[in-house]
Length: 268
Image (cartoon, rainbow, N blue to C red):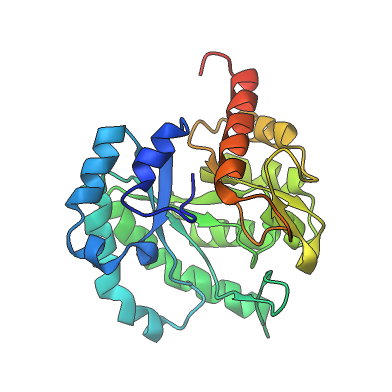
């Protein structure tokens, strides 16, 4: 599960009540009080037997001089990852902004090739440091990169601990085939966002998992067939107007996803 309208300290218990095995919380969504004293969150994770994936949403397309300013936060994030027992750090590549009146993230890029080169230059030393810490990085195919961009970053960075957070819905925001994107990125996946969408491009919106245009059964089969055996993390964002309340939709979507996982691998 991904953190939404849930209190951080209540989230592990809520996830357990829904039958989820793990949660993902971004470092920057942790309240300052939890960052200062994370013991209560760790206790909740252990009490509910919840696996933890950390997020660190520093865009690697920023100039290196700007990223240096976050070195203290990076060090603290690594320390907290170890404290929580997290082995995977979910990353993003660029700065994206909500489109006014629509909400769909957009970005302004003058030179895509130069941007990708900058991401690679910045992420390589970060990956090396994470590797020395025994941590795996999972760069998301966010609403910024197409699948070819992701493949270029992975190839040019050439870091064995740099993997992918495969988001099943973001491809349609880029007018790409979600099944093709899944097939190409799933072999590199260390984490997933399972998300369904209606529409394409700027006006696409996420939906309850069993109500969108993407065949979630098909896409989860593609991911499984690639050899992926990690967490399937439910995600909603930029929802349709008049959409159901979040908590009932989370319950229905998790049940739907669990039923598909059971069909794909009854032994799991």
